[in-house]
Image 1: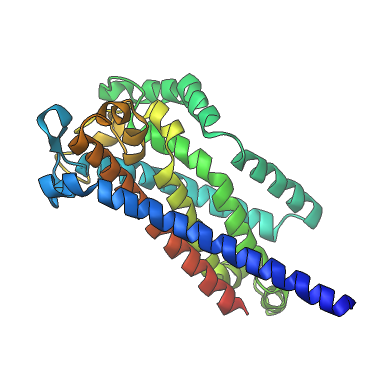
Image 2: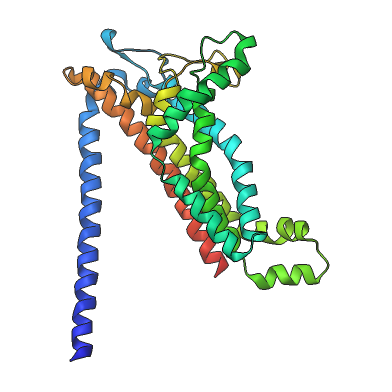
Length: 303
């Protein structure tokens, strides 16, 4: 009887899990379908120009999202450039040098940082980081500390917990036998990390970087408070660093602005806002899926 009961309980759990998973998937598909339907007017008006054009003036029915796409990618790039070496270095130290008890305490502290609300980081950015950036760049005749660079630095701090935790897990699960074999062959600790640990765990580290990038692209509140929210900031030269020290706009901050409320009464304007949301969803989902796939490939490779 106990075996029958256990089988029934297992079956109930399995079917309930399947049902809820299907419900979540259907809900996501319904939301995406609704967004696609509501975004049709702006695509009919602008076509591909919605993605490529550089001007956004809703009072003139001009909707070009290119500067916001640039702002999103620029902020995320700054965050990754700053966070990647620090995050991977901290993960290597945590996985390869710390004893187990200290490693556990370190990971708990890092994961607590991941739970700090975004608005708290944003307030710290307003109180501290914005002034520091302004003072550091004052000789370049900047108008304020609100800029893409400020948002990128703040995002770098925010994505560090995600990056360190995931990269540490990938490095820590490199088989101990391989590391001991490398040390037995005469390799130093540094050489073992460079030639054995990192090559074996590179897929997991890359997945950590991509998932952190997805977090950086989708962040709104903290970026909203320090980015300046200036529309139509399209650089004359894409690779010029000058636009980074000026105010800008990202896809997420546009969605968080008061323009979302203004747009609700105008079908085309509202369609443009929904289209911005779809672009952001596409970017974040693409990066996250690639990161997840890379992580799964890394686990299969380890097995």
